[in-house]
Amino acid sequence: MTKGKFTFVLHSHLPYVLSHGSWPHGTDWLNEAVAETYLPILNMLNGLLEEGYHPKITISISPVLAEQLAHDSFKDQFVSYCEQKIKAAEADIVQFAREERKLMLSVAEMWRNYYREILESFRSRYHQDIPAAFADLQNRGVVELMTCAATHGYYPLLSQDTSLQAQTNMAVKAHERLFGRKPRGLWLPECAYRPRYPWAPPVESATDTEPYPRKGADEFLSEAGIDYFVIDSALLQGGKSIGVYLDRFESLKKLWNQFDKEYHPREVDENRYPHQVYLVNSGGEGKRPVAIFTRDPDTGLQVWSGEHGYPGDGNYLDFHKKHFPGGHRYWKVTSAKSDLADKMEYYPPDAEQRLPENAVHFTSLIDETLSRHYETTGTTGILAAPFDAELFGHWWFEGVQFLGLVLKMVEELEHIELTTCSEYLDFAKPSQVISIPEGSWGEGGYHYIWLNEWVHWTWKHIYEDELTMQRLAREYRDADDPVLVDIVKQAARELMLLSASDWQFLISTWSARDYAELRVSEHHQAFVRLAQMADKLGGGESLTTGERAFLADCRKRDQLFPDIDLSWFAQVTYPAC
Image (cartoon, rainbow, N blue to C red; front, side, top):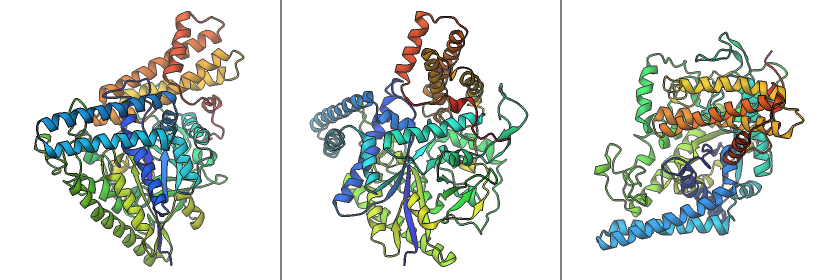
């Protein structure tokens, strides 16, 4: 008798960084995530298959990330990056041998071997094609690949339904092109949802100040053929949202103090179960409802919590302290309250001893939680454990090994089965339609990380450009001049990149504030100039040599979404009223 089913849901995303700097902010983010998260996850899953296991996992890959992974310039840069990391480790080996620092010498040798193996995997095992490697695992029934909003636009705060339509439709089209099949699930960025209701911009803008009809996020997913998305438990049941970022960024604690007094959690609805799948339809009759998978709060805390989570164990590799100039890490967490000067040297055997204990504890929580749900409801529930993929391997170096151990242990449980979201959806066939409120998986379940005094200015630019984009698409989408159409399509790309939720997050967390502010300014300014060029050409004037060079530079720099469709930006296919 199967009492429950389990799936990790890993959300993989990085903003578009190709041709936008390298270090400390830019393409090195992508290289680090590939070397420390995406390739290790691929190796772990293939390794389990080779051992005779039958792993199943759900992985979301954002379209903007997938476009970068498929780009030739990334492939060349990643090879160079790995070669640099190998040389840096070799230089550290020489230094630590000379200084007779035996423990750090052994870790330097570990880094050299690690990057040699990663580079070999990239070149020989996956032939430099990471999207194809994930698609192969999908075809073999190991992975279900979800998509995400095209550039990770924050659905509740974008001002025009055409923007949500474009983010959704572009996601489905890009996913099918890059992975060979249409996605059934879409990860709403930051798990942020808004139902249908009259909405007004939360900051002063060029858009209407009076509330105007807006569709629910679920409606766009339904229209695009998406079957499900993921939400936080507080959106389903009420109660306090535990957040996912507060423990990692001191600046967010200061921001949260401004909102904490105004936050009043809804009462918990005991008749809604986070391990049951429901349907959502905020569009009324005639709309196909979309299923929701709910984040399990108990298992989530075990990984996300900076105070109680597994990654905070003192034996694991510390993320923050690095040895320069190579940037390799040689110290362990030591304790959650240790400053960098107090970090002790990393000893891998101690970390490896902690992993089985953490995996056993996590697996027992899965078993207990799903068994309790079965005893309470008499139904075979689903425990969905959603996390940012980059948490594993990148932030928590040993995290990919943890994932592999849990997948093994769950497979060996008598009453619990591994599954994917779509596989469970087909099994459960949910029929109960409910309403859920607006919210995200941020602390308090609302938007304060992406909407606060530090980022209001970004939304003003986005709102202005959304309206301009609507006009450009309506006037020029069917133009006979291919150059004019190219200009408007590039403007659409710049708007989508401008709309990424990453910029507000990086500004609010102070983790790359200057870089994010620069990116917002660059994309906005590029959009404005392209719009002016479109109107100039559309009015019968010719472009100057400089303007043609600017278009070529924009197309070369922001080279993604070749199949973008201007009709998505012109008007909503099914308007809210």
